[in-house]
Image (cartoon, rainbow, N blue to C red; front, side, top):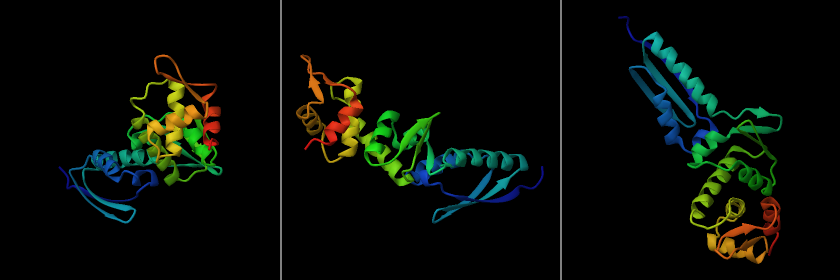
Length: 204
């Protein structure tokens, strides 16, 4: 057997990875197939000293490129593209893409989804922050008895008003006339939930 080869790799931590660095580092570790790795983090850079056979090192480099590509945010004109799968993974819950779009629009950003990617002019911190707020709202509303569209309305409203609790959000929506309650206590939206959200946001 030949002597283990040393390869030094410098990685700039992607912005999307910084929101949950521990998870990124776990995935980084699983991408390494070499016998020995010495790593250190300086600011937003990771420096790896990889020791192993040429085959193991090449396989590791291939997996690292694949990982970094997944976390990349390629520019498309003025907008950037974000993987919805990755955003959901970072938020810890499957994000409803239509709710994500409407919340970003309500915050004054352009937003659309194509082929599993979110295109928006919002920066990384804003997108990750909105994703986290939506995830929190979904968890808060877990036990609210409502239709699917009513739940989307309330998720979006709570994401935009995170200091409210579910009961307060429901009361405001009922008072604004955008939600109604049937005889079984189930909440449903009057009309399109997106238009209902605009009405609710403008309600004093």
